[in-house]
Length: 396
Image (tube, rainbow, N blue to C red; front, top):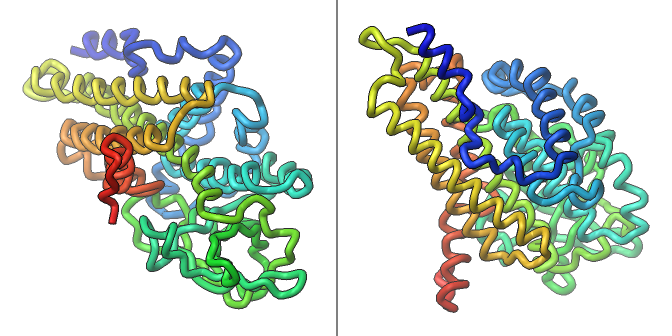
């Protein structure tokens, strides 16, 4: 039986890339992905479960991530959207919490600066952001506003001479307990439009408190933010962030990143479930020898391939500059639903060992719940897609 397990471990499909999507990347992109994969295997995977169990972020990893130079691969470094997606999936495969940290800093925070700041603002801020010398967060969701935050933003901004006065609260803000800056979206009292501000987290009146007792993405430091008469100089109001329509320019792209996370987490589930099935002995033979177990593994693989195929095509549309909001919404809804099924099947294959983090699957299973809900719930993304195909809005 040991020989069967050994042979299975060296099958060409062991990496889960059943349709060889990675070969669609350029040689340079494949080499870069291999470099990142090696870094993740060395620096991230060995500590991921322990950090998750303790609910602590590995701060010493940030300079190493800075040296790896992962921020803004498309906008700054000229890589394809397909590469950027596969990169994000690979980081998620190693640890969904580190992928979320990068998604917040790169996609949401850096994306806000790149999309909404003036050139003068970009020149002042982006060098330290790209190098991770300054860590960012993204403050949109509120204690009483999630899916309805577009029209229900309660955080306010009031112009006062050369400054803006911000008041309100934000919730579920990743990285916010240790970030240097946070982009805060607040409703201008003068015109009721949502505007964007870069807020220094050391300013008087700003506070961030870690949200405790999470069952998902425990390594991520989500926080409740309070803004009590925080004075922000006018230069730190993002020049092109003047309505929620502007904010949507950022969210469209980050919704794609979360769909890629769903791909990566399914790859992680397949990795763990497949290895366990070929190594675990039951009734004198490996679990992989049982038809029902093979059925579960193939279902996980099929879900992963289907999700990856959708994302590959969407990345091509992004590279061509023709991707639409509703296509991003469908991708996020579909891939996260498949992810939820995949991680449940993976947990089932591990039986009782699937509910302890020692074997990895319990962490994967739990992390899926956050990915399923953030960056637009399954229901909202479904209704965005439904509106596009019927011409009728059912959101309200």
